[in-house]
Length: 311
Image (cartoon, rainbow, N blue to C red):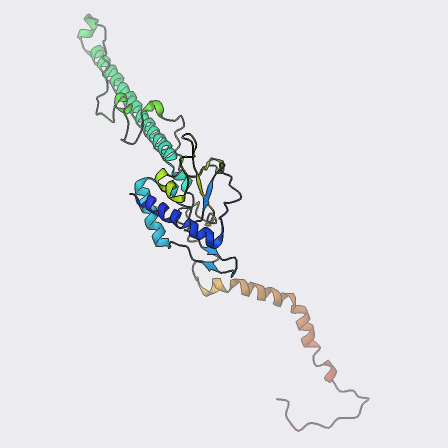
């Protein structure tokens, strides 16, 4: 049994105990799935206790989550795992989308090989044409050409098989074992590996051996109907500044390095100089009028001279 199915069985066995303690989990409000969808608690995210207000850590640590994702990647069942910090959008790894990506990648590779093959054929043809012109010039310059005129026959050589790439017949064959024939390849050559619209994200369909443990009566479900599961919560999307241009280390940082002291104090010195020049006239006027009130008045009696010196 694969590690992904073991993980799903463990979570389905723990669902009744979770419902008895915390109630039935509710799915995300922004996502609407098909009717009859079952919602499961996400064990990869922390949970807040509604009574105490405290946050409980996730059921699986980040190291355990990384191990589960690694094993699911080997099995090709990443789309069955709940969304987490390590795997924000598992719906991008469904088998159908992975097959589309492989087909588009194979078609892109075939187009590149076809273009290189055409360039090789054009190069060989130009070389043959150039050799034919040289041969014609040699025949015109020879003395026999003045007496006997022979028609010039140029044999167009076909490019060798291993001259500068595979032939067109070799390109039409599948590139890899995982690729598909050219008839089933998509028209677009772009590889959809980044993002998909939210409307296309469908919940995963789980195996019957797993669904039987959850208490679902599979006999009541018709053969053409499908049973879907949905996780109750998703991790918040983190926008890393500078990740789109590859400067996450320097993005949103005011100063990366310390620099010299002149550079660090330049802004403060500029501000202080501006303040001093702004109040210069006021400061000079206050200095010149500081001792004006201390001059003796001749109409008043003389004061006794102080014994201490003025310094």
